[in-house]
Length: 110
Image (cartoon, rainbow, N blue to C red; front, top):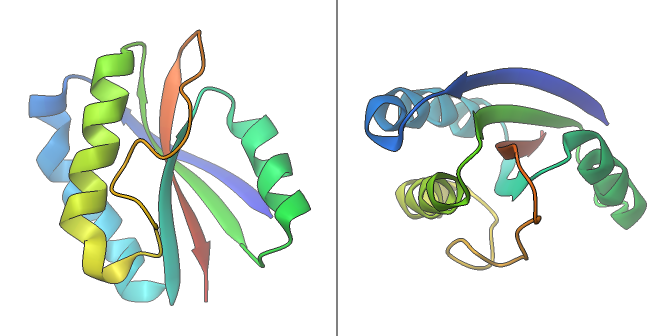
């Protein structure tokens, strides 16, 4: 799996609409998309590879030092993209890391 960094930093209010547009481009052009959060993208890629679900790319889309913002961002984008993604829960399905920075990412496959 390839790891790509293509992210914004900033407050929820400033970043949210631009991020919605960007994520929508991925959902239009990829057959399967999942949204998640992590505090260590490199480790998370390895974990997803071990699950062997065929993910091709992990794209990091947002970075923040705020656990509040990362959880709000994840929930907002899962709700907005719900019909087009494979997430099983509406955000907050996994534990948060104790230390930031925190990242919102997309998993992609054809």
